[in-house]
Image 1: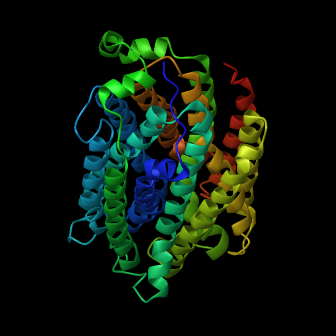
Image 2 (image 1 turned 60 degrees about the vertical axis):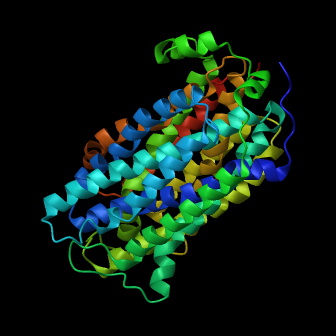
Length: 433
C-alpha cells in the first residue's frame, strides 16, 4: 500500500470548506427549530417529539450515502455528487420551512407542514454533511487526520457563528422580530434565505477545488478488494467493527442526548431564567430567542478557540474527557444565572465540549478503521452513535421534563449530568493500535 501524501494546508482547507455553508444551515436548524414550532403553537411537553425526525433521517440517510458513495465512480468523484445534490435540496427546503405559519393554515396543519419540511431539511443536510467526513477519510493520511478534522471543526464552528447570529443581526438592522400569532418573524425567515444562498456558494467552491482520486489511484492508497467491498453488509461490518467504534459510541450516546435537550429547551430555559417568561407569543420570548442565537454563536467561538488548544494535549483521551467535563459544568450553570451577559460563561464552557465532540470521535474511529475498508459505510454507520441517542432522548424528553418539575431550565442540568457521564466513559476507549 502506498503512503497517502501529505497535503498542504490549503488542500486540507478546500476538502472541508463547503462544510462552512452546510453548518450555517445546520446552525439555523438547531438554533431555531424549537422557536419556530413554539411560535406555531407546539406544547413544551411535546416539543422534544419534533426533534425525533432529524436524527431519524440521519440514521437512515448517512449509512445509505456512505455505502452508495463507496461504490460510486463518476467524472466528478465518488463523494462530491452526493454532497452537491444534498446541498441543492437543502437550499430549496430552507426557503419553505420558516414560512410554515405564513400560508394561512390551521395550527395543526402548520405544525404538520413544518414537521415535513424539517424532515426534508435534515435529510438533505445529512446528505451534504457526510461526504466531508468521508473525503478526509479517503484522502488524508493518519498523521494529518487530526489536523484535517480540526480544520473541519474550525469551519464548522465559524459557520455556526454566522448562522446563530443571523436573527439577532437582522433585528439590529430593523427587520421585524415579532409577527402575528402563529407566524414566524421576518428575522428568522430571512436568516434561512441568506443561509441557503451561502450554502450553495460554499458547496460550489468545494466541488470546483477538490479533485478526488480516480478508482485506480484510490486503490493504491486504500487497498480493499472489490469482492469484499461488494459482499459486505451493514450487519457484518458492525459485527467486525473495532472495539473503539463501540466505546467511542458509548461516549457519543450521553453527549448527543445532552445536546438534544439543549437544542430542544434552551430558548425556553434562557427566556425563563433571564426574561421570566415562557410565553411564545410574547415579545420577550422572541428577544430571548435572538439572544440565545448570540449565546450559541459565543459557544461556537469558544469551540474555535478550544479546537486550537486540543492538539496541544499529549493525551487524546484526557483532552476529550476534560472538554466534556467543562461542558457539563456549563450546562449546570445555565439555570442559575439570571443576567443575560452572565450566560456567556456557561456557553463558552459548552463550546469546549462541542469542539471535542466534532473532532475527537472521528479521529479515534477513522484511525481504528485503518485496514478495515468500507470507510464511507463505516462512517455512515458511526453516525448512528449521533442519531440514536437523540431519538432516545427525544422520546423521553416530555417524561423527564415532567419529572424535573415542568421547568425547561432544569433540563439543562440533565444535559450537564449526561456530559459528565460521557466524560467518565472516555477512559474505556482503547486508542492504541
